[in-house]
Length: 105
Image (cartoon, rainbow, N blue to C red; front, side):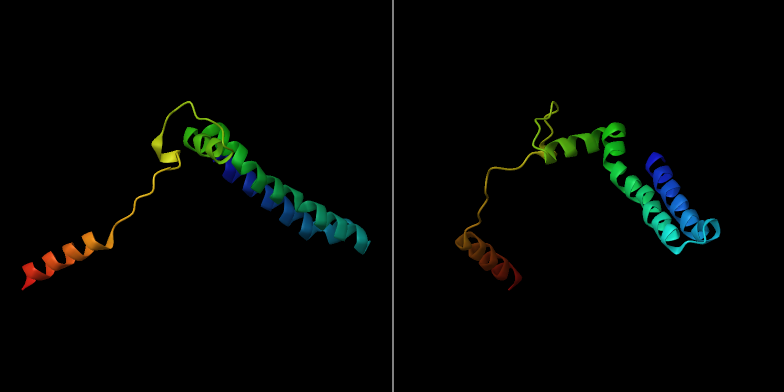
């Protein structure tokens, strides 16, 4: 709800400012500046999401820490990069196919 509130506030203020800018002033350059700076609220809302999610949700906090390479206190394997590589040999796949084909016939 917090992030939705920020986004809605940003879009409402931007829309109202852009709509009313021609009513407030007769100078085209001033209206253009008002419209340009009105977009700051939308950008603020978009940029604030990561900080709000970090403060509110522990899962987002763990993922954001992992993205920045910070060590997590909770050892959750879901966020750790795997250092092992699994390879499957083609001979074992061929044997499985032969067994499958033999069981079908």
